[in-house]
Structures are given as C-alpha cells and as structure tokens.
Length: 404
Ligand code: FAD
Ligand code: NAD
Image 1 (cartoon, rainbow, N blue to C red):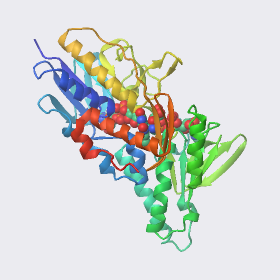
Image 2 (image 1 turned 135 degrees about the vertical axis):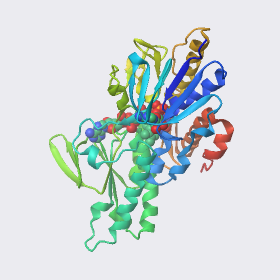
Image 3 (image 1 turned 135 degrees about the horizontal axis):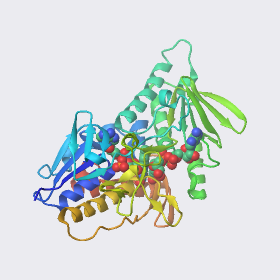
Image 4 (image 1 turned 60 degrees about the horizontal axis):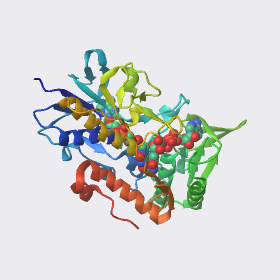
C-alpha cells in the first residue's frame, strides 16, 4: 500500500509541534512527511518584541529547524507557499509544487491594518525576525542620526506604539529598558525621547483583569510611557500619525511608528479560496476544514469558538501548540486507519504579559500574579515552549535563565 503523503505548511508553534509529535508517533514506513517553511529556521514569535526593541539579539529568538526534526522521517522544503489548490490536492510554492494526501495549514499570522491609510507604507509591525531586526535598526538609526543634524529634530526620538493589546504592552516594556541604553550610547538627553502608546479602546489590555492592567500602566508610565487611551489611529504618514479622540483630531510627529493593533491569519488562506474570517478558517471539532476532511488547520489560521463565551479563542502560541499536538495524534489515526479522531479541547492555563526584563502581570490557573514572580513565570513559560518542541537540549541552548 502506498504511504500517505503528509504535507505541513509553516514551522511556527503549530506546524513544528505537529511535525515533531508526528515523527514520534509514526514509523518511517508508515507515512512520508514533508515540512515547508519560508526560512530554514523557527523563531519564537512570542519573543519578537524583545528582538524588535533590541533587548535580545534576533539570533537568540531563532534556531535551525534541522535541530528538532528527524531527517530520516521528515523532508524539509525551504520555500514560500503561494496557494493551496484543494481540488487537486496541491500546494503551489514560489519555486515548485507539492501534492498531498493530508495537509496541515500552519502559516500563522500577519499584521492586520484594517485598511487604515499609510500604515502599510510607513509603520512597522512585529511579525517575524526580519521585521523585528528592521524595527531595532530603524530606532537605532533615528538615535544615531539625531546628533548629526545641524537643526535637531526631536520628533526623530518619538516612538509611537499603536495598540495596547498584549503585543503593544510587551513591546513597551522592552522599550522603556532599551531607550536609556540608546540615550547613553548616542549622547542623547533622555528628556527628549517620547514613547507614546495609542489605544482605541477605553482601557489598555481590554478584557484583562483591571487591577493588573492598572499595575502595568502605572509601571510603564513611571518609566516614561505616555498613554493615549480611547484614541484611535486614523492615518499614518511619513511624518507620524493622525489620531482621533471623539471629534478631536491630533497629529503626532514621530520618527518611528510600530503598529501592534491587530493580527489576521495568512493571506494564503484567502488566495486559496477557503471560507474564512480575516484569514482564519472556522475548523470542525477535529481541526479540519469543513468540506475538506484531508486538510487540518492549526495555529493562528484556525478559528475555534469558545462555547462558554460563544466567541473565538484568541490566536495564541498556547493554543497553536495544543492544536499541533492533537493534529499529530489525529493524523496518526488516519495514517494507521486505527482508532478514532479526537476533538480539540483547549486547556487554557492562563496568560502572562511581560513588562520588560524583570516585571510582568498574569493570571495563571485563575490566580493573579505580578512583579518578579510573574516575570519568573513568563520565563518558565518561554522555556516550556522550547522544551515541548525540542526537549531539554533546546532549553539548554536557547532557554532564559536570567531570572532577576
Ligand atoms: P507563527 O508563529 O506565525 O508561525 C508561522 C510560520 O509559518 C513561520 O515560521 C513563518 O515563517 C511561516 N510562514 C508564514 N507564511 C509562509 C508562507 N507563505 N510560506 C512558507 N512559510 C510561511 N501567544 C501566547 O500564547 N503567549 C505569548 O506570550 C505570546 N506572545 C506574543 C508576543 C508577540 C510579540 C506576538 C507578535 C505574538 C505573541 N503571541 C503569544 C501570539 C503567538 O505568537 C501566535 O499566536 C503564534 O505564533 C501562532 O503560531 P502559529 O504556528 O500559528 O504561527
Ligand atoms: P490584539 O488584537 O489583542 O490587540 C490590539 C489592540 O489594538 C486592541 O487593544 C485594540 O483595541 C487596539 N486597536 C485596534 N485598532 C486600533 C486603532 N486604530 N488605534 C489604536 N488602537 C487600536 O493584538 P495583539 O496585542 O497583537 O495580540 C494578538 C494575539 O496574540 C492575541 O491573541 C494575544 O492574546 C496574543 N498575544 C499574547 C501575548 C501573551 O500572552 N503574553 C503577548 C502578545 C500577543
């Protein structure tokens, strides 16, 4: 009998977890497994705010995919997926094409700009290693240039962060630690620097525990962040942004604008004609595309409804990894034609949001934590993600051990 051909698209948390679990579950003779990713490395997306601010080198947040896959069982293809053709069971890539018996879509997230004018052209987004490196270098360039100009332009030293969701807040936490270093390095008076966070909702971190939100905002304000709450970014220009609070319109001149105010699933989902909401496919209980039982979706391209709230679960690494685990198990059932498919039941352990090197807030197993305790927990969560995919050797290589 012909071995089924499993193709996994994307080596983020969801795709890589599916791959490493599947290589454990099935033998060489049971299936051909191919993993496609646009880079030959995996990056810890959940650490990208650190690489973007420059508090952690971008090489610390990535590792070669070959470190964790079993080359005897998994063929790795470095290419960019352009389109999926479900009716022909085909994946079109920039440099070739693949056919599949079973497909796993794990192409992750992209920045969502909601059609706001100028954002794509003039704002940065924390979305991958290349983008993070560009943000870090752009901020450094602004600081390095400031003192070279005859007529000093203070707005060069203004950094605007759009959105006070978890990404925006975590990035601000790193920035407030990085800016004093940059001021020392480039002989800049720290009072000339402005870090402004613009949030459209009536509070930062909408929906999170209000007491912890207050703690986070106070800590960041104390370190120099100016919050503009209930204020929406309406446009981004080469000079900065235009915001609106009710009927009041204001222009904020800034040398750097980082848009951290929304994500969507991969554009490949739309290109391929799947029914989706902002690149996220509402999957069946087994994580498959309705009407396409040979296609699984994990991670940020999948949409799972929380039955308690009747709202989608937020796209998180926590869920992507759990989906990857289950997807591998379900694929093994199909490959062996033995056993029953299991439905996805997320096990949400909590949320911890970093506020920089030694501070954080979080709710873990229903308990509120903040300060160094939460920061310790955040690093343990980061190390656990490494452990789940690459075992103790990956933790030793890439783990975070500087706790206080
Ligand atoms: P991704 O991690 O986005 O991986 C997708 C992979 O597919 C990447 O390797 C990419 O290179 C590859 N790829 C994309 N397009 C193509 C293509 N066309 N062809 C080939 N390859 C492609 N969640 C948490 O649970 N906890 C956190 O603390 C947390 N912190 C975060 C911090 C930041 C700064 C950000 C931005 C997000 C954070 N998240 C966190 C959310 C979390 O990172 C995402 O939910 C998670 O990365 C989704 O995993 P994924 O596997 O779906 O996709
Ligand atoms: P998000 O959608 O969660 O937050 C975006 C924020 O931007 C919201 O507060 C929204 O009100 C605001 N916003 C939207 N439009 C705006 C506008 N025009 N002007 C100003 N503000 C505007 O996005 P995110 O923070 O990037 O998070 C994406 C996903 O990743 C979420 O599921 C989140 O839970 C997850 N994440 C988790 C962690 C963590 O667990 N520590 C960290 C980062 C991200």
